[in-house]
Length: 205
Image (tube, rainbow, N blue to C red; front, top):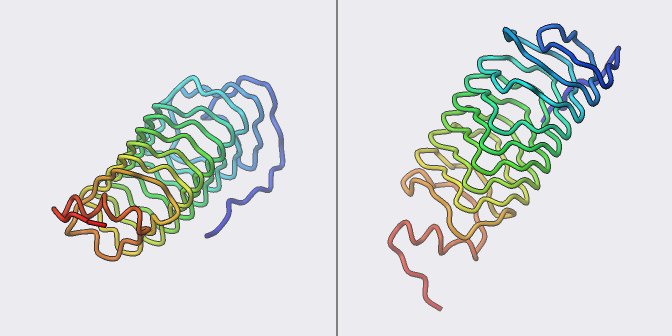
């Protein structure tokens, strides 16, 4: 997985900044970010502990962007593109990524309960040590996507092909998926009852 480029030529700290006016190669720390009209692309920017007054960022292209310790709950990133991006220790409760494309993207130690990533395309994507309780992954296309040490309780993978997906290091008691599309999914022995129940199979001691 490729990491975001992090060669910043300027740092802005504790200022009010318009999203439309952020230049490439900028590190923003403790800033108030406002968005009036939106923009098509933002590149090589890091948002560290920033506050966003607007939650609408749909159909935006994010290239080499890092969000660190930001509250992005209930944001709309629908039909956006993320390439070489990282979300580090962010809050994304109920955040929407419907129909978005993610390549070389990591969510690290994030709170993502009820997040909606349905109909997304994910290539070389990693979810690590994140809370994904009741998150939605309906009809997603996964390629080299990993879930490492995550909470996936009641996560919904319905209508998604799970070949090559490994959930064995993550935790769940109940999970939703389409049994006919689960071929190639890797799980632990103690996770098997949840999958077997969907097939009408009872596991006895």
